[in-house]
Length: 206
Image (cartoon, rainbow, N blue to C red; front, side):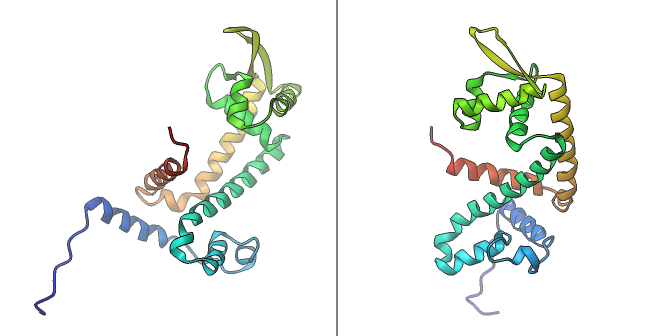
């Protein structure tokens, strides 16, 4: 054995576990090089990122490629949600408002100002969306007990039934689509922590 040969220093257990997990995840992917996935304009994120890497040095553009992947994933998620909206006779924005009311829990109510902040829209746009939901008996305006001049937007029983039906179908579909990840122990946890770190890095500073 040559005298300058050194033993490799073992990696810390968390690092090695991450590398092993990444290799396992990579093994679940199949190459998609045909049809829409390979289209130079509408292809998947691998195609889009490959194009950017021909325009800039990889170490310069790679931090931006995370955003490219996430934006494309967001587009795919919106498409899946829009399909469910169509079946329920809703627009995507109406569904998002119903989801906001649903996730705050009973009594499933928010102030209009909360809706403005959450959806980053004008008061006129928020009022229009609220009006559309009230016309369909999916939400209702009720007095705000903490402000005699104000009101709350609350889910109606029909609205709760509609949005829960949509959410149940989306959860079933996503469970099916993400089966390759769920079969790998720790994959979801690592993915979630990575997304949390990414959001923390690019999010607003205190």
